[in-house]
Length: 354
Image 1 (cartoon, rainbow, N blue to C red):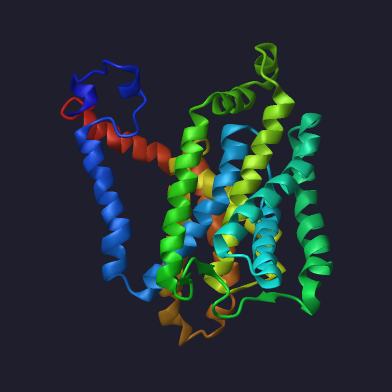
Image 2 (image 1 turned 45 degrees about the horizontal axis):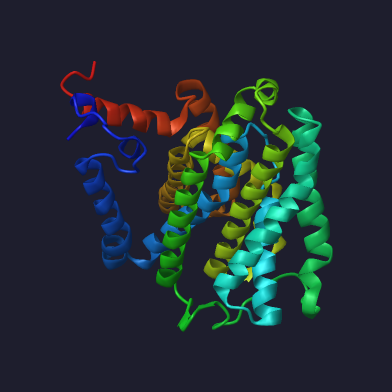
């Protein structure tokens, strides 16, 4: 049953249902089977590792999408809050022996509060000045606090190494790419559903009103300062969850994982995927990760002739990233999510899709 062809809602609950038709429900069941059964059964470890990178990028970019896409607060320092989450989770497991799920929750709260601290200037500044504030968060957090002090806790020199058996969920030890994959799927589903539900509430509508016109929102009774700080807190929570997940994939954490270029990368992900939509976070993460993996395969045959190509792949990656943003801004400014919306409408409205 397709809604555009004459099936209408009769109840308010139907209008706000997640999956409103039998066809959509069937698609979502297939998606869950694909993620939880088919991919783990048939994919090799390389594909599983790529899927874990995609999941990490989704978790990391979701907070950026919230701030920029839904609340209109430009941020260029989100990697700082991811770093806070990663180090908080690692310290709690190494120093205090807390289980991994508890460390994730604690990392989310600490990163959220740290994000609010640097979100306080958003009450008085916006635009270019807010960009500078978030950049300051990046440099103060990663280059000063973490590098000079936090990374040396417990007599450690530069990075935290997590020995085998440190990351546990109940009786299960997370010690393989496949187990990390299941953790990633659970976190991505929970964060996506939580964000989507939050955006349907009064809080989400307030964020969108601030994004569209903060003066008009304040005139309508929206507490702009309160909801801006709440947006920074939730974005920090999502960043903390992303950082806590990342250490389960690498089994160690270092400041080099949270550079300013990673903050810029996350902004580019939502620009390519689509600003102001959760689909854009997913599509942008998949696009950027898979394009880079494709470039690696394209460069491998040439590495025998030009060995320096693999050494300089980082510069190729940055060039491809910049070129992708320019092309999308020119030819697809609304991102991949808008194209996906058009494709869905074409099939839903067929044969009258014109």
